[in-house]
Image (cartoon, rainbow, N blue to C red):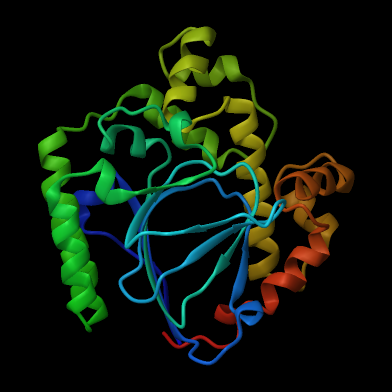
Length: 277
């Protein structure tokens, strides 16, 4: 398995892209139930590329299945899905800065595709179809990232993005750990409380308070997976929860299982078996 979790973007892209992630794992002959990874909501908006085998998204609560295209935009999840890896699973994630997807897609309100994936070729220019074809032929991982970056640099130059105070406020809220005042974030965005709520909803597909809950849950899950020696009370306090019961509430809503069960399900995911950088 090849796993590159945090590839830094070109300096000209760092105001828009947090990082890239690349995972390639061969699973030929592995049964479906052993190729599933739990994906609870996280605080990121992303563009995913699948240049090899098709990938399926399974809604955890209903079992409904959706097949991903060669590339997909993912807005803001509010519920868990289970990802069924293909037999030749290669994924490249472009993890955008919080709120940037709204500008990248020509100011389409993110709420229009909340909790579902959108075929990226349907929302972008012909260059993305060409990029998908190039990635399918490429075998060098670094060249794959280079082709994606060339596309992003060209695209961002065309859309003439402008980082506004609301965008900086969204990034600050995404990383907030302690109790906060929405009035303070609205003031940082140079907006009234009502204007801040409306513009936040456009960019993130949900209210600031609900997004803050998802961001805190996401931090807790990732902190525990990266530091298994921490107990859950340590995780709760480190991520700004008042107590363990509040953390438990968020896990039951967003992951649809208890914290310990989510970690156990994640441990047996195919990408957790071995890592080669």
